[in-house]
Length: 76
Image 1 (cartoon, rainbow, N blue to C red):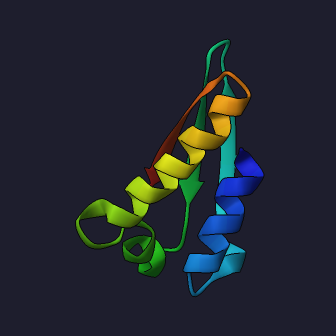
Image 2: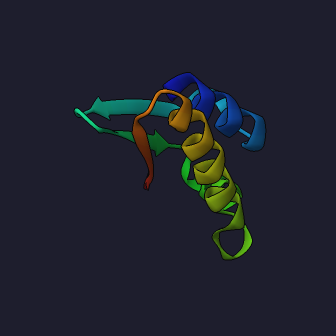
């Protein structure tokens, strides 16, 4: 899941080297934290949060295969 989020984020931003993804795993849920450069934050969130919601939807579909819930947090 971590690699998937990193791949998507790097494709969207201007500074792909500054994309950092960390994962905190629990029994049923994984929390994935995404950090990007300040100037790229708007590109990850998108208009009205649509891009962020799309990333969350893809993550949710991919995590359903593993029978585990994944939550994306975008950290400033």
